[in-house]
Length: 184
Ligand SMILES: Cc1cc2nc3c(=O)[nH]c(=O)nc-3n(C[C@H](O)[C@H](O)[C@H](O)COP(=O)(O)O)c2cc1C
Image (cartoon, rainbow, N blue to C red; front, side, top):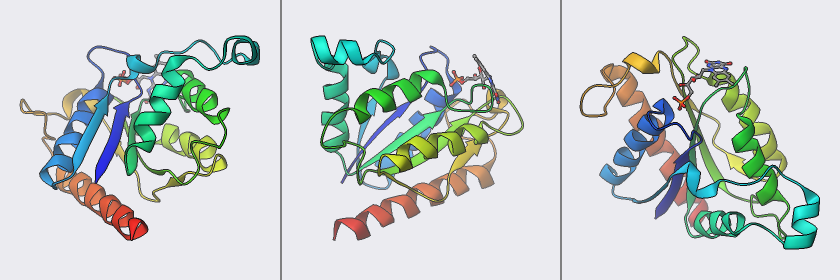
């Protein structure tokens, strides 16, 4: 089983990158394969139907779809921008959604977020569910938000809070089991 994953931040020292790296190590420790992408591999122009109609889809759209479809699941760690989904991530979701057949259909998605705030970017998760579910993805009911992310990681990239680390590991494990059941 392979899980495709990325953090929806372009920032070099992104907390969401740190979180997705931790998730990747958990998935590997649980014996599954990981395809960890960098968000800047999928930098796209703002969605414009004229670009689509005159030039076709940007290569990054088809590359993203290939990698997503080559895996059994998708994990996204996203920042929260102004209580919602970052425009960069929504733009990617929108571009991909214009391909037929709908590439998001039946994707098994786990959502995580990290923020220096006390809410951990949780509102971005609820905002991200909307376009993904509307496009037919199965978004795992439970999600993970890392609050005070600027002081949450230890020197090895794990979480200082052991209970939180265990909750993340349990969530990832449950999500992988759901995929296994759906694959049967
Ligand atoms: C445009 C913008 C809006 C933001 N709005 C929020 C917000 O609503 N809630 C929040 O917790 N953090 C907000 N932040 C702060 C981000 O959580 C913080 O920049 C975080 O480090 C971004 O994630 P990253 O570290 O993965 O890049 C905002 C940041 C930006 C640039």
